[in-house]
Amino acid sequence: MIAIGTKNQAYASSQQQIRDENIMLLFNQIRKAPVSRAALAEIASLSPTTVSTLVEDLIRGGWVVETGTDVTFVRGRRPVILTVNASRGYVATVELLSRGYICTLYDICLNKITGTRIHNTEYDGASVSATIHELLKSKRIPKNQLLGTHTIFPGMIDSASNTLRFSAVIPHESMPEPTFLQTLNKSFGSSHNVLSNNGSIIAYTEFISEKRQSSLPLLSINIDEGIIGGVVMSDDQSGVRMCFPVEIGHIIVDHNGPQCKCGNAGCLEALCSTPSLFRMMNERAGMSLTYMDTFGADCNVTAMEEVAARLRAYDSAAMTVLADYVHILCSGLVSVVNLLNIQSIRIGGDIALLNDALLNAIRSTLRDRFRPLNNTCEVEVELFTSDYEDIRRAAAIQCMDELFHR
Ligand SMILES: [Zn+2]
Image (cartoon, rainbow, N blue to C red):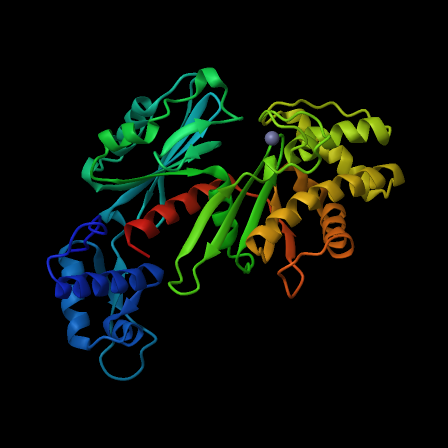
């Protein structure tokens, strides 16, 4: 049996601990790709007998199944291939939104099983738990097969108490209770329930993206009506990856700057949110963009497309505004780069619609007008477009990686 959830418990003996670590090592290898017992023994540097015994335990526990033989094997008896039993367990992701939430259910092979979006001005941990129960019921999945849940919150989390603190996206009157996670823990006591800030999940999504490799530490920043960020780092000695939110939007870049929603003045968000760029374009580049300061306003996407068209046409007034905007943005970026020795920056959100005009301006501004202190080479900067499916999947992966102690 896989010792899911025994991470913090005292082990019966050191022998048991070694056995549990080995079984997890084998299971994680099988999670990566279907594999034979012989190949597992080689990868894990374990004896074939040990591997056979541990694999038998995995099969008995329902975690692994035998699926045919390796047809690429040419000489002798073809080895049996082992794969993860997808229906052995499930993970639910929950995205807390303004006036509603989305619940999605994945099996342990990351196949999306089902999902639903609830539109409701008021919701809390109990209503979200009820939705997860309904999803499980609709697929005839027993509650004890829900191995974990991962809730994504667009706002600040008190990390000491794991409670929700503040969100600029969810209006105050429709915020769920601060002890949201504790409510989920009551409903799903045997599951591993995790709560994350959306900025850190977006950073993790970009890090595991198969499109490109990112050097760590990685800073990801989303620029829309607000600015959120996250960092992925790795501990050189243990190889453990850490993923955490950074309040880059509230770095003060101009102490004489405009008032920010957080109560301070001159924050990066107050100067570089997408509505701030639209205002600059209207005032200084003769544009007449229609925009709103509310999250997810459709007119803001249209406004950004109009700005992109101006920049593609090399409109000189718009190019000057962009250069000034990028200079302020880079002040914030360089602060985080110097603080955490960032090696790669990924920029997403509506701002990424500006494409090469933005990317080239950021790269040249960082190179010509700033001096990152710790880096021996240039920080890599790329734009990304985050797909909500990818973000949900990354949340499910992160929850499973914690479950299986990776
Ligand atoms: Zn602020």
